[in-house]
Image (cartoon, rainbow, N blue to C red; front, side, top):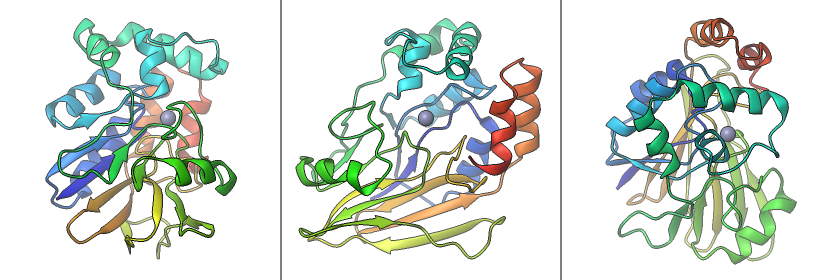
Length: 251
Ligand code: ZN
């Protein structure tokens, strides 16, 4: 089975469309949350995600926008964007967002794999470095966990003795590029496909990944997209300008 992994789209329609166009053939889609928040196209992005009929786990922005979680832990910029997004959404899309499941979620026939937004232990926790990753790597019920939330493509491994960082290596900084690696049976993994709509790993290109469970490989992708249009829409909507400018640098 080949699973297209999308995470942290954040209402960036231009980035989502570029990823869907660039994605190789796949059998299903799993979305790791934060479908909306920050970007200017929340309804169009939710409509697209719903039309693809994939599985979606809820992110913290999905919870905040739909009222499942209050805004007290959000910084002012994220809070403003959440309130703006709530006003834009159709009642149907707001209901859809509110009913997204909490992770971990699973795909039939793949018992060793689970999908979460933040961490296997806490949906709102950030796994940024090897210290953060150690406990979830050692205790997660599934050997392989796909996660998002940090907006940084890559991940962590545990071979029974030490943790290592997975860091995709790309040949070009501004073209469609991919990098794949084999999954070993005796290693535990935390894998982040990166953020579609607001990368924060200093690469402006939209990020996603594909899991091939038969071949036991994960392929990471980076895709150029129409950043300028996404930025203009954010500014035209009256959202905080920083939400537009940060897309240029991926930080
Ligand atoms: Zn996010």
